[in-house]
Image (cartoon, rainbow, N blue to C red; front, top):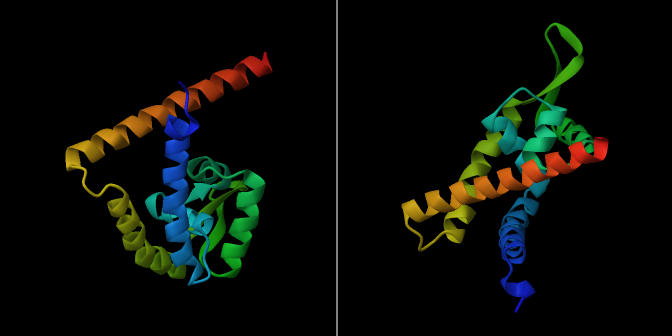
Length: 152
């Protein structure tokens, strides 16, 4: 018998939402949101991204991300600069303040990840991460196939 509360999408979403709620409460104390943290962490991982690349990496719509980047620019956390040789392309980078901010937050994000996987072995954690990567790949491939069919 199907049970929503035992379905994979439900459990995955609830775990992600709960982890986000815990971290968001901490971020709110410093006037930051979870999407802002994700922007900073994504640029920490790969600085100099285009807005469209960043949107895919963190799973935000372009218009939402563009407004968020504007706010983060006003806070001196990120900057937009023109790509050399291509005046139409803007690249997003961390400012020194943004780099310092995310550097102080990454250990807190790691704390919540450690809390979520407490009791699992390093091998089990690696297996879960690989499995989630495959699941994301499967769903991304399905979405791409659906978009291609719709275009035809």
